[in-house]
Image 1 (cartoon, rainbow, N blue to C red):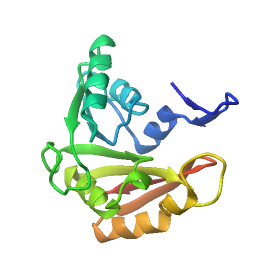
Image 2 (cartoon, one colour):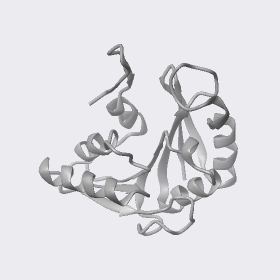
Image 3 (cartoon, one colour):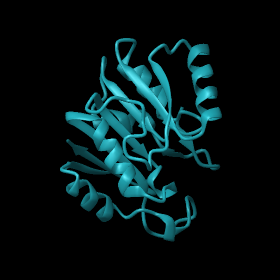
Image 4 (cartoon, one colour):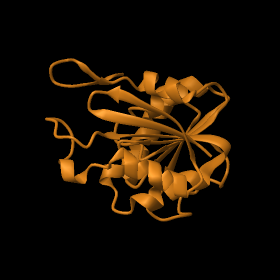
Length: 184
């Protein structure tokens, strides 16, 4: 599945984004703020295979129930739903330092306490683990949230640095988004 705009053009290819962060078999991944459709969740589960695990984390319980039902229907035994408020440090029921890759994909613009969300994602990562952040660019474009609610990449980089994360790469998953990969 590829996110498309009404013209049929691809907005973001989730497989390309997940390959960029280096997902591979037997990894443990946390899709933080996984969303209604599991847009990155299911491709990640396929990439890590049955020997890996993907945590589907969201604040909406009914959404998680629907994703878990879909996972069972599609025979994904490696997806685990976790209800959490990511804005509360330590609230996510995943042990600290156990995740190879944490995903914050188009989620920060929806959060009030963005710094706590980054801190929670960092808590979950193993040493050497990677954090992938994508967000809407801070310029005015037709798609996406209002410009004043978008999260500037400089802010993300500064907050990540405060948490001891090392910036590995900047990339453009689409003309409307930026991508950042950090290492713990």
